[in-house]
Image (cartoon, rainbow, N blue to C red; front, top):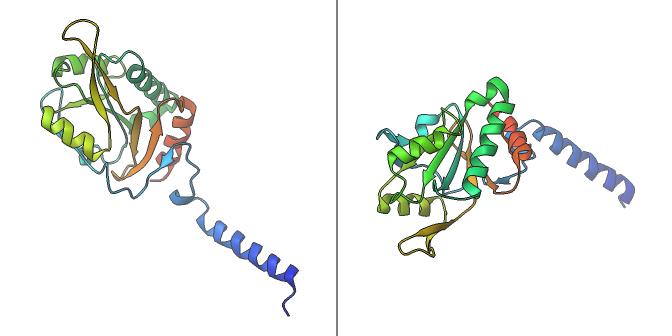
Length: 200
């Protein structure tokens, strides 16, 4: 009969050895955000930027892309998210240049290219704003599993937008890796981006 103590030691050593093999690998990284590596959604987009140029995710290869869906008249979630990203980019120093902020509007009716350019420019000169027509916006939001809906305001014709509050993070190879919920905080985002920046 096998000594049960020896069996437990052997199992522990095997587990330690397996864990050791994964040390330092991207799969072993302890992300603060939700790890969605390998997801079949949020793979790409094809939208125009504020200058009218069509942009795809491949355009940002080599950088860590952080994609957020929102609208410029958002009172809290959107500006807070972009402010945190701008602060994290700055805190990363030179490596912050390798982090690309991408804002996708869910309100193309009001968010014209001119409005979008001015809006994202207030968070950083390298932030990119993307927009599409109503059909394109619905399609890309569906592919990213992003919910949005108009909410009528008090004044006639006015409205706000309910929408998913979170960002998608892509690694330097253009693969979707993380979904970070609103409210997670700048420090958690910084730690996650540092992990991805190290995985060249």
